[in-house]
Image (spheres, rainbow, N blue to C red):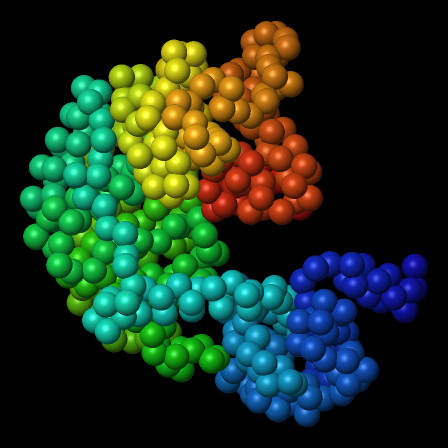
Length: 464
């Protein structure tokens, strides 16, 4: 195949990828600019191709452009966040990987691959602003933030009461707490209760789901950013600074990007942070509470969490048992949820029929207390105004009959973990198909958090 044909083939292939691709020749002129990059930067490729890069992107220079750095100093840049203005003046945020193309030691071209994260960046900034705004006294007067304490926790199961007793003891000190248990068991409720029963109760309580954002944005969200640290960066305190003197809850710590974990470990060891792009060490006094929806032994075995970080986080460990192991709490919780949603829907439910009680006590609750509340809320919302008793007919549960085990030999061949993983993947794929690949609706159908579903999609490499 001739060089010209190879070039044409490569151009056609690169037009098919979702990421933006921009290639400069050795003189700094654009020789390839795919449709994805044009859409990202709101540019017409005809205004870019065969034009000097500096003439088209006048706001960038050798210091701020990874493409020009690659071209002039052979600099390789991996997964760097860049923020710049497109031709319409709109701020664009990307994660860029840029490499020089060398022949006989000389740079003959520079290639940049960019992933658009503008919406994610906007979400990250919004989260930080909301966290910041909620602490302003003038705002607190107008916003009623739900604060949970141990009085909000309902239960009489002996195992569960032991957990709550340990949690109350942990509130008296500032040691790190590691809470694990299945989704929907009330881990965040316990975390908040620990904070508001502690000497730090009048200081901020901040929470961040570690599965919600990619590493580059999560780092800025946690540690803050320094003006001039990278293109478009502004001085903004992160959650550690915002929580200073108080408590920071890191939810789903098992989903924290592995590359970010050493930076968190350093903060725990040194008690100071450094903003992204900054050079100043900022002392902080923050209690860390982490939650995890998987067994610690499993996540350590699979390498999801560094052992040295785990030991720092796991000073006090609390295991929250699933609802199926707290059968004596089911009706107690159900009655509490009835009172809550009676008020919400202006209904007058007083209790449950015998067949409803039998159903509630026999159901497995894969979504735990959160699923029980959803079931009660659904039943009450569909009741007639004059009804006072919930019957079995008021409750509906997901139809999982088509997911029953059909061949025990499969388990013997692959092992139960592999079988269950395959089963979970199939259920998630079906939920996505049934909801037109809308992650929010699919997560509601599966009764799990949106972030949890995103984590599982990544875990099973499900294509959207």
